[in-house]
Amino acid sequence: MKNKLFFLSALFLALVIFQPANAQPRGNSPTGVFVFEVIQQPISDRIEALGTLQSNDNVILTSTVTERVTKILFEDGQRVEKGDMLVKMDDAEEQAQLAEEQSVLEEAEQQLNRIRPLVEQGTTSQARLDEALRNFNASRARVNAIQSRIEQRAITAPFSGVAGLRNISVGALAQPGTMITTIDDDSVMKLDFSIPELYVPSLKQGMEIKAKTRAFPGQTFTGTVSAVSNRIDPVTRAVTARALLNNDEGLLKAGMLMRVELEKNNRNAMMIPEEAIIQDANDNFVYVVRDQEGQTVASKQIIKQGVRREGNVEVTSGLNVGDRVITHGIVKLRPNAPVAIKAVQRGNETLDELLGRVKKNSSEEEQG
Image (cartoon, rainbow, N blue to C red):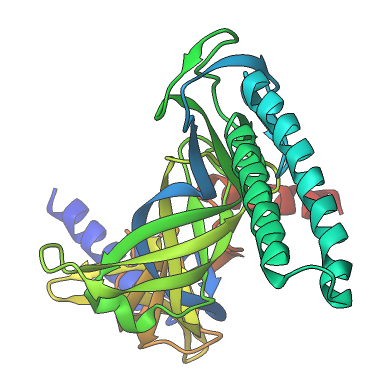
């Protein structure tokens, strides 16, 4: 028994002594990682707000007289042009009065034309000319008044746009204030939104904005800031701004709630995927691939963060353009641990996409 123990001890010592000098424990074998090469890309600080749409011009058409409706010349939601007649009311009495008064006006004009040369010849007095002129002007004024009453019985579109729902029928008695329909000029939409006073210096006329609505998910509408209120709300400490959005397709409707995005401080910044960042107490750090004594290792590097953008984080200090930051395989890493780069991440590739690319490359190499 003692001889057996002695033999085993001697064998163990021989293995330790004659182990090759460059042999490494299995625990120090390189860890396979995926890396992202730091680049600069244009970004900006984002301001978000909520706003409500309204048409560029809008009006509620109402009657100004008490009269019976005889014609309705538009349909619900019809696009109309400026000056188009929409509703016609009974104006038979006014038309008769106009015909009568126009005949009186013609007679007064003829009388004026007969007297004027007689005054120039001195065969009649200036008083008769003055009286004829008064009669002519009075008759012309009465004609204009009757024509105005006729125009009040014809509702026309004050500007081009889209008519709303019809709220009156033929034969109905319209009264002053009776709502007939609405018209909205939706070629351009006004978007009013409020932002905190902190961002007032960033608001400039002509500044571009982006807006989205839940009615059209995934679609972005662009516009420009046309005006900024000259007052700040003392309760909300916010200022109201107005942007104009082109609406050639007619998708946007008055009253829609929209989420507004404004961008300021445009700059080029170093961006890395957020999965590369590790938080340690009050610090944030990443693992950067470095060459150390002929070996590729993971070096711990403390960084400072800026803004976040859709899975990416701005790095304001701690990295340089061209640094290779480890994004996957971090869990098993320790500072200065050896690593083996499996692939370089492109953009926002997922881990599954990276693994698929590595597998595809391996298959192509085997076939080659």
